Image 1 (tube, rainbow, N blue to C red):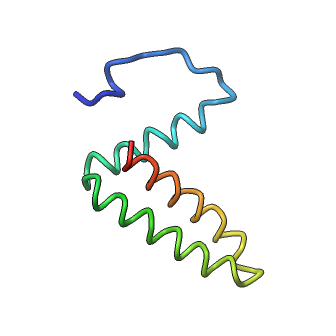
Image 2: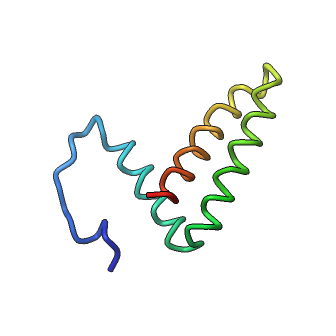
Length: 77
């Protein structure tokens, strides 16, 4: 069992999307490993940055950068 399966805390409904995203990132880290997760997160941040440089791509680029940053952060901790 992983660490997030042991603790069952009540999450306020407004924070549920953030908790779900964090658990999804934890699942990716469990499957791929920390180093691959960090590399994948960094790659998503770079692709998001490149997409953000175009005005139209900013709609996709900003969430990519956010998810990449969170994935890298989750890989470190």
